[in-house]
Image (cartoon, rainbow, N blue to C red; front, side, top):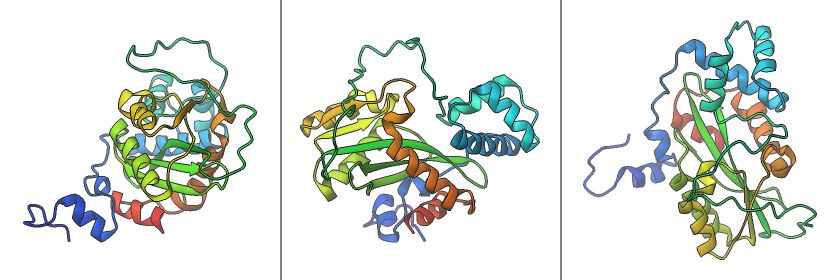
Length: 243
């Protein structure tokens, strides 16, 4: 259906015409064993219900799914899935000198109108084989999903493009809130927000409630769409989320 080397249309343009994500077209399953994919799906479900579980309690919970797994594998898979246990932590991570962490601006703030505060996050999406990442932006006041995309990598440019799409369709917010992930603290991402005169807000480390609105979205998406319908391809996942 998509023709590589088309004289008039690029791959991206053909994907847009067909209503699929170009990242979904290029989707290649991650190089993990079938057993590890199954373990990752189980970890995702456990984390969704118990976000405060560390790798030790996840290791115990995995027994209910029939997996006897060592802690090193659990830690590696959680890192691959971008899953971080939610609990108060000491400041043990030294940020890159080029990455600025901005203060959290939403504490005590009354968000009473649209385009006042937007929130963005990335979540792991399990596939029939492999996994991808879903990122979305919501308006905190209306809880409306302003923009989203699916990719097999987490890159700052990908996140910036999702923001650009939201701004093009809905205008720009006054405050933009994210976590402290490297994609969001990168100069490529933060400079784009600052150039658009948007105030940057970032969650405190280990604070689950700072980004609670979009976490509720992930719970609904996974329980209602992802878990009941394991997709085979990135384009199938894209169409399912779009629908």
